[in-house]
Amino acid sequence: MDSIGIGYRFKANCGDYAEVIAYENSVNVTVRFDCGHERKTRTGDIRRGRVKNHNKKTIYGVGFIGAGEYKSRIDGELTKAYSVWSGIMQRCYDISCKAYSSGYSDCSVDSRWHNFQNFAAWHHDNYIYGYHLDKDLLVIGNRIYSEDTCIFVPQWVNNLFANSSTTGCRPKGDGYAAYYAANGKQIHAGMFDCQIEASAHARVMRCNHISEKINTSALDENIYEAVLRRLEYLKEGGVVSE
Image 1 (cartoon, rainbow, N blue to C red):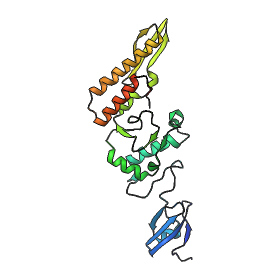
Image 2: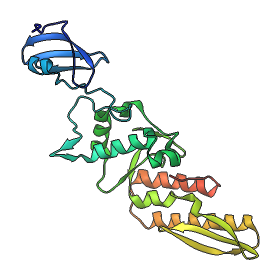
Image 3: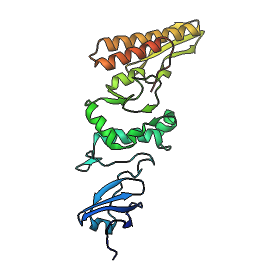
Image 4: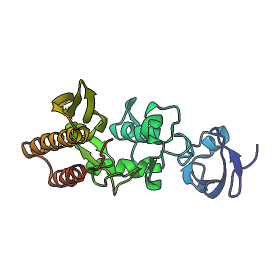
């Protein structure tokens, strides 16, 4: 059996190669994987190949767990941070995911968040129980998940701007029926002879609904101001949807 010391190379069970770069004793050995990741381990684990590469990109070929305090599971259950993180990774990088094909194919995750440890630290500092991660409330039209662009918001705030296709008009009889989205329903907003007038009225009604909703609800100042900016954009004719 080869003696394990500095310079010893081995193949871990994960399929990656590593080399011993420091040796203090059999239970304190530092190895470096070929990708550059360094970690401490024991000679027994080296011989059995049971040395994990925390930087191996096991999540859709992009994300990795990283080395740190945050775990993907606790007592066998996925942590909230990992569930949220794996969800955004799936939407952006899993081509078989329905969300990917329905609007996320041009979305990406900031390289800092490829490392779960970085995302989990941000999640720990910012998560509010019951709130949902939003990527484009702070920056309209944003397509990148990052700590600079994401914020946790109540689900109803997300719903305010979701499914913009449910606001507009359609031909009906000799005119056009205006409609808009409110509280998860499609609301009839009247009949018009002109298509342009019908669409404009539907937009006004939707904006009025959003304005009333946010002004009668208690919202964090950052969320409130972001919603106001998005509302102004919608009033000016911008398309805002998830």
